Image (cartoon, rainbow, N blue to C red):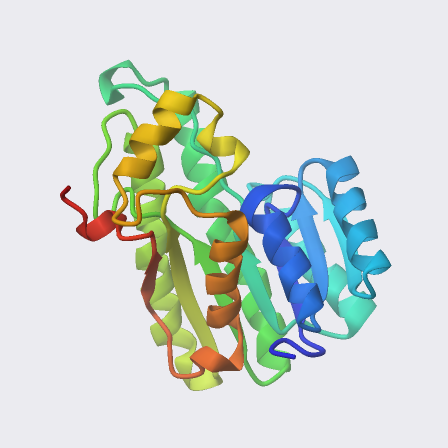
Length: 250
């Protein structure tokens, strides 16, 4: 198994990419710590994993809260004696609209949930991985703010681009400690965040070279690659898994 006996934190694990990743990692032998705000959803997914023979614990909270990041690491250490990896996947799109019309509250919320949460996560995860002699961290970023600028998404783009900068610095700082850090940049994916307007989804699908949206499991596979030994010489990367969105002009 690619993640056998690895203890991995997964945030945003109550639905979408995070839930798909938690299930996949558990099937590949990982002991998963599930994090998100919706406790009932986390409990349901943890129960599913256990029924399938996997190992899962969960803790509900807000990733923008520094104490929550510390509590997730503490749970990993108390339950499984340490932390090997983390998929810091939780995020929010916020309210879309022109920057001139955007409230400061929306800006701060999007930055806090998408970017400052990465600071809190890494601050507590890295010391725990150092105790294990190494580890791997993946942040969910986006092609938005990296290869494309979508009108109305200034806060989201700024936050997700910031994660790439954070990734690069952490990779350089902690590479000598055998801690790898990468950013995963998904394309459009069939999640609640994408909504359910068929015309909008068709438009978004057309932006991709593959002319479709990703299934959450496809993005989870990319995250697993970055967290597993298959990517042992990959660090500091903005790893694009976007169905050709970034190169498509047709």
